Image (cartoon, rainbow, N blue to C red; front, top):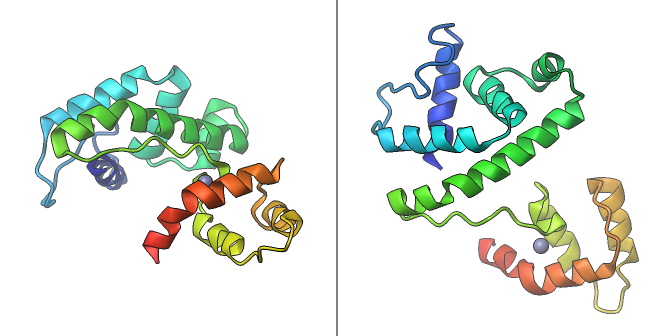
Length: 174
Ligand SMILES: [Zn+2]
């Protein structure tokens, strides 16, 4: 999504300590033309976040602060800050989906609800799942997921569902 590129540029700009918050978007000789509608949409989306979520986004993306810095300012643990990040991004994706569709004709899919699809190691996990032989039980896979990826699978049903319905995407990627 082009917004993130704008935000990254802004972060770089901030390292010069100029315009700490305003303007939201900084334009240099980027190949992406400045689009006031993007700025409007992102501002509106940010407004819809909770106060803490918005503060996280401003500190992380606009001011370029690190997790530990933000944790200290907000008086929260790192885990909570990670959680804030995840929720804020999920909400922004949702709030901006309609705008991105209208403006760029790009369909933003909601973040996957499946714990395996949502994992950053999804491709590795898919390889692991594909390597299970039909006669084997899921116990070994469940154990590896827990030990190596800290993913707790309560019932093999979620693995079977993922394999049956979600693995198609993985096959396309190969
Ligand atoms: Zn899945």
